[in-house]
Image 1 (cartoon, rainbow, N blue to C red):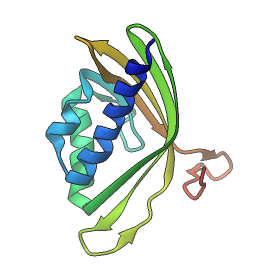
Image 2 (cartoon, one colour):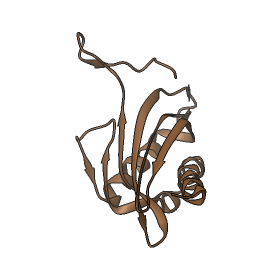
Image 3 (cartoon, rainbow, N blue to C red):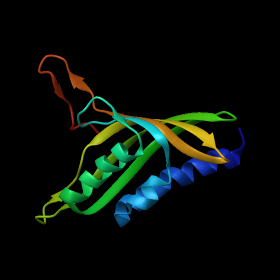
Length: 143
């Protein structure tokens, strides 16, 4: 691992933040592997391939007029060809009806692979803690 690998991964995650703010699906497409497997917070249990991942992000744009995405407390472990990272993330913004939404903090894990010299997200998992008794996600926690 080199510091340039870590910097490249950080740039890729920064591109997600900018692409969501700019509502730019093409920019989002550039940070994921074509065969990405995503375990997102919304059903189904897995989203297979770049088209499915982009549909998830496109869904965000159907509800939000403005989007803000924050990644916090990122930790990376980087090898020669694969890397993983984990962080907290929050999606917030203004809904199309004008309501401001503060969003919720989620846990996110990234699995990346180096493809033709570029770090791409091959897997991501987003989750919220579970209240075992109620069977409901706990969405009011903060890092």
